[in-house]
Amino acid sequence: MEWQNAFAPLSLSTQDPLPELALAHLTSWGAINMVGQDKKSYLQGQVTCDVVTLAEDQSTFGAHCDAKGKVWSAFRLFHHNDGYAMLQPKSAIDAELVELKKYAIFSKVEITQSQDIVLGLVGQNAIQFIDTITESRGDVRPFPGGTAVMVDQQRWLLMLSEESAQQLCSSISAPLVDEALWTRLDIEAALPVLGAEQQTEHIPQALNLQAIGGISFTKGCYTGQETVARAKYRGINKRAMYMVKGSISTDIQLGEEIERAVGENWRSAGTLLTHYQFADGQAIGLVVLPNNLEADTPLRLKSQPENIWSIEALPYSLNDDE
Image (cartoon, one colour):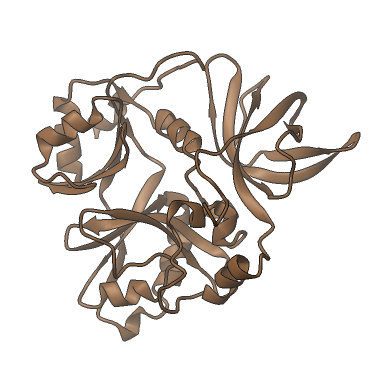
């Protein structure tokens, strides 16, 4: 596996431009694969997104919840090989597999953890490169050895066999970087990420899944639907996911506690779901906070109280009417 050692950190300040093309190894990401005659109907009855209407050249966000509407898994769903792939943090997969398989014995479906490699292509030249390795022109494109999935105009996910990944890494004319760059762009796009530490802590709306097309309110029943619907129609959800930014004195860790100012005091507000550190002493992260906080509410890391953080504007609206 020497090819996997070729990926190196890419140090960027807040002012540095992105590379025109870079390939990242997304080591903390994995997927659950679902194949079989009943894969569509089974998954439709388990998750928040509409599986039935998902075109083969499209992807969607979604969530799998417990009976109380708390999220086991927040994922990106797309057609892959002969079935579906649910891309998500690796740390969530063990528990999610158990929950997702609970009723599979009654259906013709096989649910397994994928052994594929996950890579991320970044940069303004990403689409040009993808066009050279795929024949189709949709947002989800099969190619020999794997599947390419468009995230945005400058990013593509690649889920592929180890042999294909090794070939790609040895042939591409672009720097090979670790996944930190991808994490940064996910944070700036405010895309939900849920690891093992926060499974069954949040309902889907607290991770903004309704704002990015990850919840269908018109599909049939699924686990946790009553809570999810009540959060929309009765306004019971009191939390949302925000991007936060501030200075740091030392490296920060996943799960760092965020505090908010309450008068002259500070009160716990949430924990970081993910974060990225720039080379010039700045950092950004995603955190679930009370959704009634004023936009200018001062925040800070509990471990670094000397640095004040702020809530940044989201790239999408949380208003159901927009």
